[in-house]
Length: 231
Image (cartoon, rainbow, N blue to C red; front, side, top):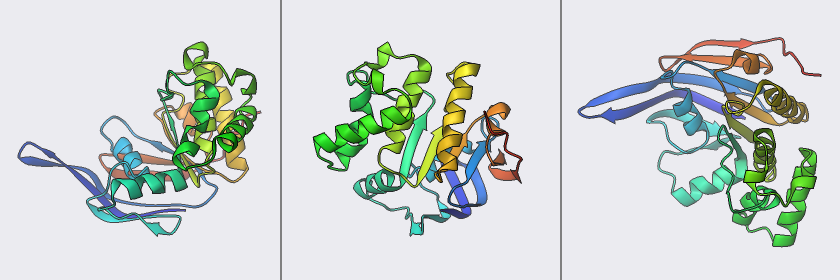
């Protein structure tokens, strides 16, 4: 599903270049649930941005479901690929404050030019999946943190993406809500969805099937683990 070969990324800092990713090689198969861990400055956010087609490698090759992601993609083509292949979940939820839960979930379908009636129907279907169909007309400020994140997960799933990219999805949640969110992510992974989670929380990482440890721009360790399935 994801293939990274010899990925390098540099940033210009004044007259110097900061070498952030130093030859990343990573293969992720369809249906895996992978945690990416590393301290601040390890390169995990840069790696996630490249995987999410929000930034591009300076060297190396990125294949997403067999499609080569070129460095010189137009923004419209990059947006098209993001819409087609990827669903995003963020720590800060990134819900639009003046749209209700259903409208937030339906928004990606608007950009896919899906008719309104179909957008709303599918949004309700995914709100029901995350247990929030009774909150469809609630605004984000009327929802708890856990409810906001479940709306965000529904929004990520509504386009039927190949891969879910989650950036610290439990970072703003308490322990019980973290449990609930990870349990749901495990559920959709067990249905076959490929999920990558950037996290600094060991308790979250050990719920995944594999943990990739980054340090100073390289993969220090890549381990498959005995997943602790939540019940």
